[in-house]
Image 1 (cartoon, rainbow, N blue to C red):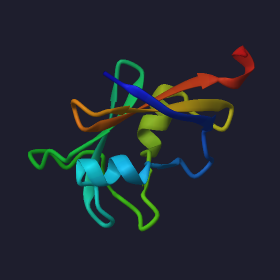
Image 2 (cartoon, rainbow, N blue to C red):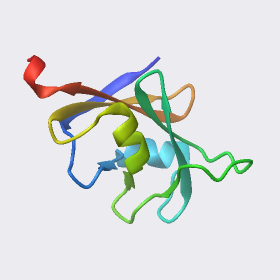
Image 3 (spheres, rainbow, N blue to C red):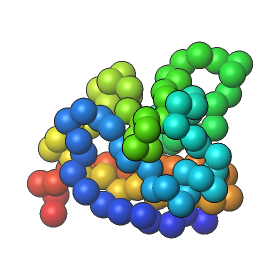
Image 4 (cartoon, rainbow, N blue to C red):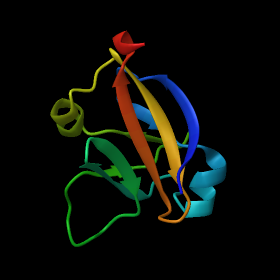
Length: 104
């Protein structure tokens, strides 16, 4: 089950701040790698799979993860989008869903 954490404008830098409570629960510490992947039009941030080196990102000191430019381009994500950050405790991952601000 996914829980919505927040909704806001997608940042120009592409950095999404992950909530401390869930970061700690999932073991995502500052300086550690996470995988950032695109799946079914969503952005998934999860534990790293070291069998691949594609789209590895570090967790910043403030708990941020930068969404790779390639994924943003693939999904057509820009500052014209809002995003909702969901927490998936069962899979221990974060899910980012974007939508066009102009649709509301």
